[in-house]
Image 1 (cartoon, rainbow, N blue to C red):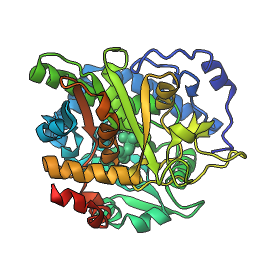
Image 2 (cartoon, helix red, strand yellow; image 1 turned 90 degrees about the vertical axis):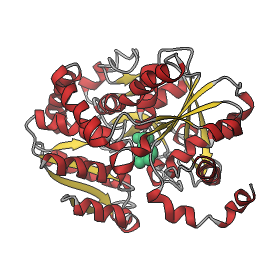
Image 3 (cartoon, rainbow, N blue to C red; image 1 turned 180 degrees about the horizontal axis):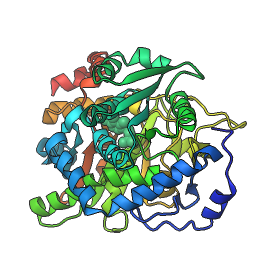
Image 4 (tube, rainbow, N blue to C red; image 1 turned 45 degrees about the vertical axis):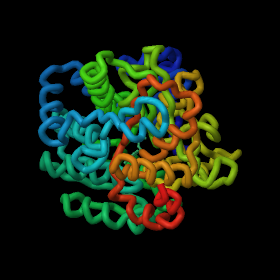
Length: 420
Ligand SMILES: *Cc1c(COP(=O)(O)O)cnc(C)c1O
């Protein structure tokens, strides 16, 4: 989106840069990050969207409709499960927030449903979305089938070929998959194409799948995912008699499951927060998606954030074993949390994530998504810091069915686990 200029209006907005916690960041800035760097033609649409979002945000009738679906369609609340054997292994008390048990297998459905209800209220009938691995495409096509809405999913041609099963699911759900032939034909290119389509079809509603993109998307997606920490509070209260943990852990691709997990705890200093980003083959190898470790300030997809780019501002192609984490940018709020020290961030490499996935499976009988396994790998990094009565809450963002091919390629290297 190098050609998207920062407009005068956005410059003015950036004066008001104090971050007041998620939920009332109405400027769209998180420290120096965020904003809405969009072409002139989208201003009206994005303003309408912002207005509509802040209107429904505290509207009890919207909440009722949304929570009805979360309960009866998605299957919420997702369990907060005390992982006994995993806790013994790490000498602390570990609770898993089971987003893997949601309908469609991950947290993404929470956001797609929230946005589609908003689209409906705005009188929109056509939905567009971008997808990389296809998970957001499936969640959005699902929501569109449920609401009887037309849906186009933009997907890089390389990804269309790599993610056959999700492509077939999206088609079966009645959505159209639009293969994108520009650039490397992956997520970044699909997003560019979706934005281009949006410019020429302003009547469509663009459902973005993570806490990325121009304001109000990061704020809105975080809000729709905030049900995760809302439930954690209630569930901890019920299970241990206090509503906060000592430590929260989540993986960060664009940052939506993490934002939802942290949302209601950001201003609670008793709660430490650690995020996992994808180290790929190692941050020094060039084959990585460790945006917070390696990124510099720039603009991608309408938002100022940290991104992996070369000296000319050309975006570097990210790499990770997990398709859901290899985005060259990062949600602006997470760039801010990391820069201000609110979150500690580890880059977790492919092999560490694989090991953690096999460990959880053998200890608890839960096969996690490879993205979630990056969060699980933090346990080993932090083992030396745990106290036996610490309460650790870790979000398992999705289930591992989609990653079985990846996992089965590594059965041999997990032989040590067999001996346990
Ligand atoms: C998409 C995805 C992610 C990464 O997206 P975030 O917006 O960072 O949450 C993580 N886990 C799973 C299972 C996913 O499908």
